[in-house]
Image (cartoon, rainbow, N blue to C red):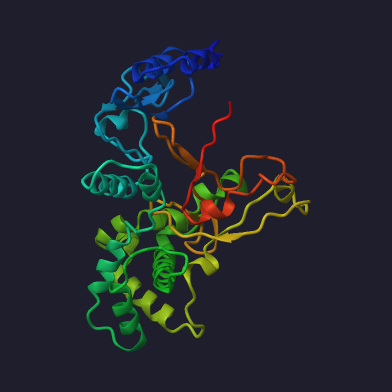
Length: 353
Protein backbone atom coordinates (compact mmCIF):
# COMPACT_ATOMS: atom_id res chain seq x y z
CA UNK A 1 0.00 0.00 0.00
CA UNK A 2 2.91 2.37 0.75
CA UNK A 3 4.82 1.38 -2.38
CA UNK A 4 7.99 0.70 -0.35
CA UNK A 5 8.94 -2.62 1.26
CA UNK A 6 12.18 -1.42 2.82
CA UNK A 7 14.48 -3.49 0.61
CA UNK A 8 16.29 -0.42 -0.69
CA UNK A 9 17.83 -0.11 2.78
CA UNK A 10 19.91 -3.25 2.27
CA UNK A 11 22.61 -2.07 -0.14
CA UNK A 12 23.39 1.16 1.76
CA UNK A 13 23.70 -0.95 4.94
CA UNK A 14 26.13 -3.35 3.29
CA UNK A 15 28.26 -0.40 2.20
CA UNK A 16 28.02 1.48 5.52
CA UNK A 17 31.27 2.40 7.26
CA UNK A 18 30.11 4.84 9.94
CA UNK A 19 27.23 5.32 12.34
CA UNK A 20 25.97 8.10 10.08
CA UNK A 21 25.93 5.75 7.09
CA UNK A 22 23.80 3.25 9.00
CA UNK A 23 21.28 5.77 10.31
CA UNK A 24 21.02 7.36 6.85
CA UNK A 25 20.26 3.96 5.31
CA UNK A 26 17.45 3.36 7.77
CA UNK A 27 16.10 6.90 7.47
CA UNK A 28 15.74 6.62 3.72
CA UNK A 29 13.59 3.57 3.12
CA UNK A 30 13.08 1.47 6.27
CA UNK A 31 9.35 0.92 6.89
CA UNK A 32 9.25 -1.59 9.75
CA UNK A 33 7.47 0.13 12.66
CA UNK A 34 9.22 0.94 15.94
CA UNK A 35 12.53 -0.87 15.44
CA UNK A 36 15.18 -0.23 18.10
CA UNK A 37 18.53 0.53 16.47
CA UNK A 38 21.79 0.75 18.43
CA UNK A 39 24.85 1.38 16.28
CA UNK A 40 28.53 2.20 16.88
CA UNK A 41 31.59 2.65 14.72
CA UNK A 42 35.37 2.48 15.06
CA UNK A 43 35.53 6.28 15.36
CA UNK A 44 33.76 6.18 18.74
CA UNK A 45 30.30 7.33 17.64
CA UNK A 46 27.45 5.55 19.43
CA UNK A 47 23.78 6.16 18.69
CA UNK A 48 20.41 4.74 19.71
CA UNK A 49 17.32 5.64 17.76
CA UNK A 50 13.91 4.35 16.75
CA UNK A 51 13.68 3.71 13.01
CA UNK A 52 10.83 2.91 10.66
CA UNK A 53 7.42 4.37 9.97
CA UNK A 54 5.34 4.94 13.08
CA UNK A 55 1.71 6.03 12.60
CA UNK A 56 0.66 9.20 14.36
CA UNK A 57 -2.84 9.11 15.82
CA UNK A 58 -5.32 11.89 16.36
CA UNK A 59 -7.28 12.23 19.61
CA UNK A 60 -10.03 9.97 18.23
CA UNK A 61 -7.51 7.25 17.35
CA UNK A 62 -7.55 7.78 13.61
CA UNK A 63 -4.39 7.82 11.54
CA UNK A 64 -3.08 11.35 11.13
CA UNK A 65 0.22 10.74 9.31
CA UNK A 66 3.64 9.61 10.50
CA UNK A 67 5.70 10.49 13.57
CA UNK A 68 8.50 12.58 12.05
CA UNK A 69 10.52 13.20 15.21
CA UNK A 70 11.50 9.70 16.29
CA UNK A 71 13.48 9.29 19.56
CA UNK A 72 17.28 9.51 19.29
CA UNK A 73 20.17 9.38 21.77
CA UNK A 74 23.92 9.66 21.45
CA UNK A 75 26.62 9.04 24.03
CA UNK A 76 29.56 6.87 25.01
CA UNK A 77 27.39 4.26 26.80
CA UNK A 78 23.83 3.55 25.66
CA UNK A 79 21.61 0.78 27.02
CA UNK A 80 18.22 -0.35 25.79
CA UNK A 81 16.19 -3.27 27.12
CA UNK A 82 12.82 -2.44 25.51
CA UNK A 83 12.37 0.16 28.25
CA UNK A 84 11.21 3.76 28.01
CA UNK A 85 14.76 5.05 27.60
CA UNK A 86 13.73 8.75 27.60
CA UNK A 87 10.44 10.66 27.83
CA UNK A 88 10.66 11.09 24.04
CA UNK A 89 9.73 7.42 23.62
CA UNK A 90 6.14 8.34 24.54
CA UNK A 91 5.82 9.55 20.96
CA UNK A 92 6.01 5.99 19.64
CA UNK A 93 4.11 3.96 22.24
CA UNK A 94 2.75 3.55 25.74
CA UNK A 95 3.68 -0.04 26.67
CA UNK A 96 7.37 -0.54 27.51
CA UNK A 97 9.31 -3.00 29.62
CA UNK A 98 10.01 -1.90 33.20
CA UNK A 99 13.38 -0.17 33.72
CA UNK A 100 14.88 -2.86 35.98
CA UNK A 101 16.85 -4.76 33.33
CA UNK A 102 18.21 -1.63 31.61
CA UNK A 103 19.32 -0.19 34.96
CA UNK A 104 21.04 -3.45 35.89
CA UNK A 105 22.87 -3.65 32.53
CA UNK A 106 24.01 -0.03 32.82
CA UNK A 107 25.28 -0.56 36.36
CA UNK A 108 27.19 -3.72 35.45
CA UNK A 109 28.81 -2.07 32.42
CA UNK A 110 29.85 0.98 34.43
CA UNK A 111 31.29 -1.26 37.13
CA UNK A 112 33.35 -3.23 34.62
CA UNK A 113 34.46 -0.13 32.70
CA UNK A 114 35.73 1.45 35.91
CA UNK A 115 38.15 -1.47 36.22
CA UNK A 116 39.55 -1.13 32.70
CA UNK A 117 38.70 -1.83 29.06
CA UNK A 118 35.67 -4.03 28.45
CA UNK A 119 36.38 -7.41 26.82
CA UNK A 120 33.93 -9.61 24.92
CA UNK A 121 33.77 -12.11 27.79
CA UNK A 122 32.94 -9.31 30.24
CA UNK A 123 30.19 -8.00 27.97
CA UNK A 124 28.82 -11.50 27.47
CA UNK A 125 28.70 -12.03 31.23
CA UNK A 126 26.54 -8.91 31.57
CA UNK A 127 23.99 -10.39 29.15
CA UNK A 128 23.87 -13.56 31.26
CA UNK A 129 23.36 -11.82 34.62
CA UNK A 130 20.70 -13.56 36.75
CA UNK A 131 20.20 -11.17 39.67
CA UNK A 132 16.52 -10.66 40.48
CA UNK A 133 16.17 -6.92 39.91
CA UNK A 134 12.49 -6.30 40.63
CA UNK A 135 12.15 -8.68 43.55
CA UNK A 136 13.15 -6.04 46.08
CA UNK A 137 9.58 -4.80 46.36
CA UNK A 138 8.29 -8.21 47.40
CA UNK A 139 11.22 -8.78 49.75
CA UNK A 140 10.52 -5.38 51.35
CA UNK A 141 6.91 -6.45 51.89
CA UNK A 142 8.13 -9.71 53.41
CA UNK A 143 10.48 -7.76 55.71
CA UNK A 144 7.53 -5.66 56.89
CA UNK A 145 5.84 -8.78 58.32
CA UNK A 146 7.43 -8.77 61.77
CA UNK A 147 4.96 -11.00 63.64
CA UNK A 148 5.51 -14.24 61.75
CA UNK A 149 6.60 -17.35 63.60
CA UNK A 150 7.04 -21.05 62.91
CA UNK A 151 7.73 -22.26 59.36
CA UNK A 152 6.50 -19.01 57.79
CA UNK A 153 8.86 -16.98 59.97
CA UNK A 154 11.76 -19.27 59.09
CA UNK A 155 10.94 -18.91 55.38
CA UNK A 156 10.85 -15.12 55.82
CA UNK A 157 14.33 -15.09 57.34
CA UNK A 158 15.68 -17.38 54.63
CA UNK A 159 14.37 -15.17 51.82
CA UNK A 160 15.69 -12.00 53.44
CA UNK A 161 19.16 -13.59 53.60
CA UNK A 162 19.01 -14.76 49.96
CA UNK A 163 21.59 -13.30 47.53
CA UNK A 164 18.78 -12.61 44.97
CA UNK A 165 20.35 -14.60 42.15
CA UNK A 166 18.02 -16.74 40.04
CA UNK A 167 20.63 -19.45 39.47
CA UNK A 168 19.42 -22.80 38.18
CA UNK A 169 20.86 -24.61 41.22
CA UNK A 170 19.45 -22.15 43.78
CA UNK A 171 16.80 -23.48 46.16
CA UNK A 172 16.23 -20.00 47.57
CA UNK A 173 15.41 -18.71 44.07
CA UNK A 174 12.77 -21.43 43.74
CA UNK A 175 11.30 -20.52 47.14
CA UNK A 176 11.16 -16.85 46.15
CA UNK A 177 9.40 -17.74 42.90
CA UNK A 178 6.93 -19.94 44.78
CA UNK A 179 6.06 -17.14 47.22
CA UNK A 180 5.75 -14.67 44.36
CA UNK A 181 3.46 -17.03 42.46
CA UNK A 182 1.28 -17.40 45.57
CA UNK A 183 1.14 -13.59 45.95
CA UNK A 184 0.18 -13.24 42.29
CA UNK A 185 -2.52 -15.86 42.81
CA UNK A 186 -3.86 -13.92 45.77
CA UNK A 187 -4.11 -10.71 43.75
CA UNK A 188 -5.51 -12.64 40.77
CA UNK A 189 -8.37 -13.83 42.97
CA UNK A 190 -9.65 -10.29 43.61
CA UNK A 191 -13.37 -10.17 42.67
CA UNK A 192 -12.88 -7.09 40.50
CA UNK A 193 -10.45 -9.03 38.28
CA UNK A 194 -12.76 -11.94 37.60
CA UNK A 195 -13.38 -12.66 33.90
CA UNK A 196 -10.37 -10.49 32.98
CA UNK A 197 -8.10 -13.39 32.06
CA UNK A 198 -7.48 -15.14 28.76
CA UNK A 199 -6.53 -14.22 25.22
CA UNK A 200 -9.20 -12.82 22.89
CA UNK A 201 -7.03 -13.92 19.94
CA UNK A 202 -6.46 -17.62 20.66
CA UNK A 203 -3.62 -19.61 22.22
CA UNK A 204 -0.94 -18.08 19.99
CA UNK A 205 -1.21 -14.77 21.86
CA UNK A 206 -1.90 -16.29 25.30
CA UNK A 207 1.53 -15.31 26.76
CA UNK A 208 0.75 -11.63 26.10
CA UNK A 209 -2.74 -11.75 27.65
CA UNK A 210 -2.08 -14.01 30.64
CA UNK A 211 -3.35 -12.03 33.63
CA UNK A 212 -1.01 -13.67 36.13
CA UNK A 213 1.97 -12.67 34.00
CA UNK A 214 0.72 -9.10 33.88
CA UNK A 215 0.22 -9.02 37.64
CA UNK A 216 3.72 -10.40 38.18
CA UNK A 217 5.18 -7.80 35.82
CA UNK A 218 3.43 -5.01 37.72
CA UNK A 219 3.97 -6.49 41.18
CA UNK A 220 6.33 -3.72 42.44
CA UNK A 221 3.68 -1.09 41.65
CA UNK A 222 0.88 -3.25 43.06
CA UNK A 223 2.76 -3.77 46.33
CA UNK A 224 3.34 -0.02 46.62
CA UNK A 225 -0.34 0.85 46.11
CA UNK A 226 -2.98 1.28 48.82
CA UNK A 227 -5.28 -1.76 48.59
CA UNK A 228 -4.98 -2.29 44.82
CA UNK A 229 -8.11 -3.95 43.38
CA UNK A 230 -9.46 -3.96 46.94
CA UNK A 231 -6.72 -6.33 48.13
CA UNK A 232 -4.73 -5.98 51.37
CA UNK A 233 -1.33 -6.83 49.90
CA UNK A 234 0.40 -7.49 53.23
CA UNK A 235 -2.26 -10.04 54.10
CA UNK A 236 -1.75 -11.65 50.69
CA UNK A 237 2.03 -11.79 51.23
CA UNK A 238 1.61 -13.27 54.72
CA UNK A 239 -0.80 -15.89 53.36
CA UNK A 240 1.66 -16.72 50.59
CA UNK A 241 4.47 -17.32 53.09
CA UNK A 242 2.18 -19.55 55.18
CA UNK A 243 1.10 -21.54 52.13
CA UNK A 244 4.60 -22.13 50.74
CA UNK A 245 6.10 -22.89 54.15
CA UNK A 246 3.39 -25.49 54.82
CA UNK A 247 3.98 -27.47 51.63
CA UNK A 248 4.86 -31.08 52.52
CA UNK A 249 7.39 -31.66 49.74
CA UNK A 250 10.94 -30.38 50.31
CA UNK A 251 12.01 -27.40 48.18
CA UNK A 252 13.98 -28.10 45.02
CA UNK A 253 16.38 -26.06 42.92
CA UNK A 254 15.08 -23.34 40.58
CA UNK A 255 16.17 -25.23 37.46
CA UNK A 256 14.10 -28.33 38.28
CA UNK A 257 10.91 -26.63 37.10
CA UNK A 258 12.28 -23.56 35.31
CA UNK A 259 13.04 -25.20 31.98
CA UNK A 260 12.97 -24.33 28.31
CA UNK A 261 11.03 -26.76 26.12
CA UNK A 262 11.81 -26.18 22.44
CA UNK A 263 8.78 -26.60 20.19
CA UNK A 264 9.15 -27.84 16.65
CA UNK A 265 6.64 -27.16 13.85
CA UNK A 266 5.53 -30.77 14.26
CA UNK A 267 4.64 -30.26 17.92
CA UNK A 268 2.78 -27.05 17.15
CA UNK A 269 0.54 -29.16 14.89
CA UNK A 270 0.14 -31.91 17.51
CA UNK A 271 2.56 -34.33 15.81
CA UNK A 272 5.55 -36.16 17.25
CA UNK A 273 8.83 -34.54 16.14
CA UNK A 274 11.16 -36.80 14.11
CA UNK A 275 14.17 -35.41 15.97
CA UNK A 276 13.06 -34.30 19.47
CA UNK A 277 15.11 -31.61 21.19
CA UNK A 278 15.66 -32.16 24.92
CA UNK A 279 14.44 -29.62 27.42
CA UNK A 280 17.08 -27.97 29.60
CA UNK A 281 17.10 -26.07 32.87
CA UNK A 282 17.62 -22.34 32.53
CA UNK A 283 18.52 -19.69 35.12
CA UNK A 284 17.18 -16.16 35.14
CA UNK A 285 13.67 -14.77 35.32
CA UNK A 286 11.60 -12.14 33.52
CA UNK A 287 13.10 -9.41 35.74
CA UNK A 288 16.70 -10.55 35.14
CA UNK A 289 19.00 -9.53 32.32
CA UNK A 290 18.82 -13.23 31.41
CA UNK A 291 15.11 -12.83 30.79
CA UNK A 292 13.63 -16.33 30.78
CA UNK A 293 9.95 -16.24 31.69
CA UNK A 294 7.34 -18.86 32.43
CA UNK A 295 3.65 -17.97 32.25
CA UNK A 296 2.92 -18.90 35.85
CA UNK A 297 6.26 -17.72 37.18
CA UNK A 298 7.59 -21.30 37.36
CA UNK A 299 7.60 -24.19 34.92
CA UNK A 300 8.25 -24.25 31.19
CA UNK A 301 9.56 -20.95 29.83
CA UNK A 302 7.65 -19.33 26.97
CA UNK A 303 9.92 -16.29 26.65
CA UNK A 304 13.70 -16.08 26.64
CA UNK A 305 16.65 -14.41 24.91
CA UNK A 306 16.28 -15.18 21.20
CA UNK A 307 20.00 -14.51 20.73
CA UNK A 308 23.01 -13.23 22.64
CA UNK A 309 25.51 -11.19 20.61
CA UNK A 310 28.67 -9.35 21.60
CA UNK A 311 30.00 -7.36 18.65
CA UNK A 312 33.66 -6.40 18.87
CA UNK A 313 34.59 -3.89 16.17
CA UNK A 314 38.14 -5.26 16.31
CA UNK A 315 36.80 -8.61 15.12
CA UNK A 316 36.63 -10.98 18.14
CA UNK A 317 32.83 -11.13 18.23
CA UNK A 318 30.75 -13.82 19.93
CA UNK A 319 27.17 -15.05 19.78
CA UNK A 320 24.77 -17.80 20.80
CA UNK A 321 21.19 -18.74 19.94
CA UNK A 322 18.74 -20.98 21.85
CA UNK A 323 19.20 -23.96 19.51
CA UNK A 324 21.77 -23.69 16.72
CA UNK A 325 22.62 -22.21 13.35
CA UNK A 326 20.76 -24.81 11.28
CA UNK A 327 17.03 -25.10 10.83
CA UNK A 328 17.32 -28.76 9.79
CA UNK A 329 16.49 -31.01 12.79
CA UNK A 330 18.77 -33.71 11.36
CA UNK A 331 21.78 -31.37 11.22
CA UNK A 332 24.47 -31.59 13.93
CA UNK A 333 24.20 -27.79 14.13
CA UNK A 334 20.46 -27.76 14.83
CA UNK A 335 20.74 -27.53 18.63
CA UNK A 336 24.47 -27.71 19.30
CA UNK A 337 24.40 -24.26 21.00
CA UNK A 338 21.54 -25.06 23.35
CA UNK A 339 23.61 -25.99 26.40
CA UNK A 340 25.90 -22.96 26.00
CA UNK A 341 22.88 -20.66 25.62
CA UNK A 342 21.18 -22.11 28.71
CA UNK A 343 24.37 -21.67 30.75
CA UNK A 344 24.61 -17.99 29.76
CA UNK A 345 27.65 -18.45 27.54
CA UNK A 346 28.62 -17.47 24.01
CA UNK A 347 30.66 -19.03 21.21
CA UNK A 348 33.08 -17.31 18.79
CA UNK A 349 31.74 -16.01 15.51
CA UNK A 350 33.87 -17.67 12.87
CA UNK A 351 34.56 -15.67 9.76
CA UNK A 352 34.54 -17.47 6.42
CA UNK A 353 36.92 -16.47 3.62
